[in-house]
Length: 484
Image (cartoon, rainbow, N blue to C red; front, side, top):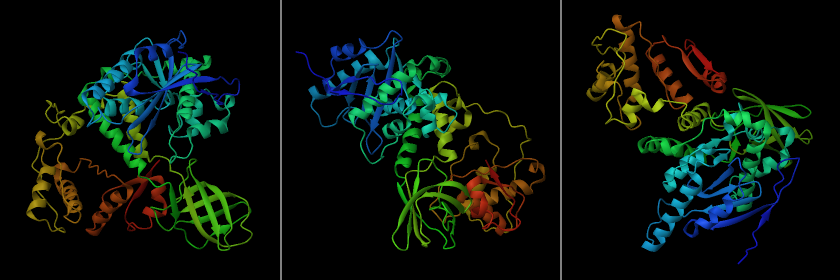
């Protein structure tokens, strides 16, 4: 019996509007004929656009596949196989997933295009135990920040051929609102259409294909954990932040300059955020940061403050990824695309694959037993053993994990180990790098060095942290520098 399918008309490109019929299926109801019916509409180039939606816990909720005129949406239960279900139900789910993998995901007759294919590939593996082959991450063609509208519009063929407002509404809508099947279809269709644009053939051809079907399970497990942990941390970021600002605010015609008083609630220079400025008389205007340097932020706003004093400033939306977050995302993508051998590095293997045979490059320095020297620090026996491990030249101690609750002296251990190395004549030519998960943590270690009058170091922090936040709180002799 013929079924009437729902239809959506994407308005992404200026040149044409195509109606796209789509079918929605649950994973336990997938039949081969459903997939074949969709695949019959794919062009001879074998291009399929893909998009996905996720639950609040970052698990895969649904995936859409699109050709130029037909789409298919599949909803998932949210577990490797649903717990508590009977054998028949579990068998139907397993059969549906196997069909999806065989006919589309790993079928090399088709190339799958998505704007964040890295996240889709990870979610398919982690949440559904499925692989993918010949998959293209479309954002890889853009030099812009992967989370920005500009990267998306580059991947769509260029802003001059797009309805920019519609693109932003479709892809950058309220993060609290679930993605509808209609929006999911339009996103997948846009990916398919962009992949078929003649002037985009060359850029996409240079992008490395994601082939999780060829990546070992143990490597995929590591990539999945790193990626999903990052997504979960990102999902915890607040969408609304009340910015703590100093009362001395300079107001001009259409902009104002203010000074933030807390680093955690500082104003950031992000195209994904907007600011709400409220006056003491209750008037509200909206704007965005056009320049941020340290504590100071210059805000451009629409409307007029009418000479009234600013009562509060509130930021809406998520900030850009930090440099560390963006780098982590890019590394995972590079490994998925086969452009990085990081997982074979000895240090990485020692942490993630400790049972593997690890070959360490011979040290270029003579091996000496470095004694502990920290005259200005009190070190207990447990800290002393930890310091000895750090100073050891044994291959078994190349990676050392030191665990301790707050206040147990981990920073003291770091300080003592560094001063011991620097004070030992035969090791003075060595360079010691100390890395931490945040700018504040790096600053805390620098302050620990300063307390014992040790200043033979350079402090490198992010550019936005360097101004005011770091320099004004570091001792005068602290040689602070910033990284771009």
